[in-house]
Image (cartoon, rainbow, N blue to C red; front, side):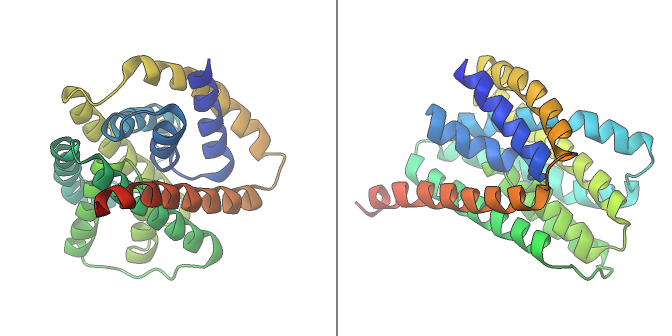
Length: 249
């Protein structure tokens, strides 16, 4: 029952804030359910796939996905997310080091989300090679931590292309969905995903998504988003501070 409630709260938070599922799910599973980091990341990636499919289909049907930009993103992101997933699998015996990296990633993603929330980004046209390169970095950290495809992908598209806002959202959703599917599939193949837990949080997530859609039309989202991002920075800091003393020994 606790897992269903956790899934409900995560999906509700995503619906009210727009913050990506991987950014919230992995640290919650680690800190509140005691899930090992590599299993939490794999499960969070698979949960993100389920969470992104409905919105992804809607944006695709509305032709609000820029296939050229998505191709550039995937050219860098797909091999890199595989590398990040395999890297986490090879380092899972170094638990504290992994938690420090995940914690720092959560903090960085929360800060980038705050930047997107508080400041207007001026678009410019980057060369496709730069987009591929930055997308590779995004894919690497998504495979390792499950966080950042939404915030970092959005920032890259907003600052490096001249896509319309709806195209930025639609393209980034598909970027994150495909990265999550590849990374989550690899983690599952390595035995780094908890499917019973996934089904429980997905069941709660379905109800949470519906509640989030309903509430988003009735309350201000910006204060909730800012509060959640500050909380994520605290959670990321807690992961780092909890693990650093063990590394120092």
